[in-house]
Length: 260
Image (cartoon, rainbow, N blue to C red; front, side, top):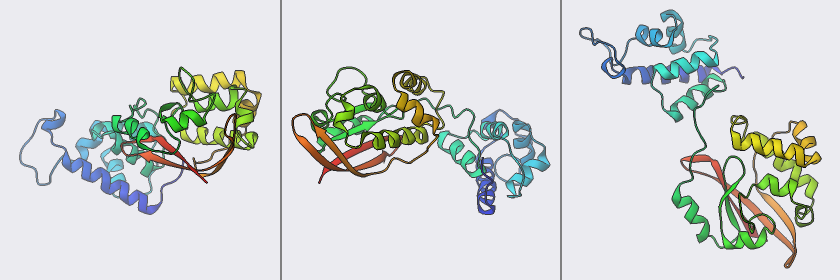
């Protein structure tokens, strides 16, 4: 948890006020009692729906420095009928982790899956468990032991549990440690998701190195940079890696390897 700045508290107050004013009594099952001087719901109505006192909710709208718990924010999000993106925005402004984001792993947009094949350099699309959803022919040729195999193609299982990966990836230990830290950062809100939990559990059993790196609790963003490989038929290869988040599915990453 982090304490929100004064600007974030002001934005939080303005945001929930704007959302309150967009709601109507009839839209949430309340009787429309008489003429209203202001649009939307009254503060006391939202406070009642969320289980707050009217005074406390008013202070929150005013941007005052009041403490708000994650369960209280969840009730407020439900009272204001916030969508997924709006709920995430509410929790971010308040400096709290959402205890129940309610977002199953999103499906990859079909256009994103197809676009990988239009890229000429090695390219692949990862979901939030670091499992490849789509890859092109160049990536299949490059990643021997990973993208040329049948079945689910998880990047961490390839790096830590496939014997040939140590020969293929130059400076294996450094790269493996970094990917473990990237995985921790990327999955911080989804550690209870079954696919992610299974990957972590499997790798603890299969790889002492993964268990050691995971215990370091290192956290890194997924970044680009030089990547080098010792390919079994093409020899030494150098690339510059670039990654992009997808519009509408930011937890998915499109990675391309540009030859150097």
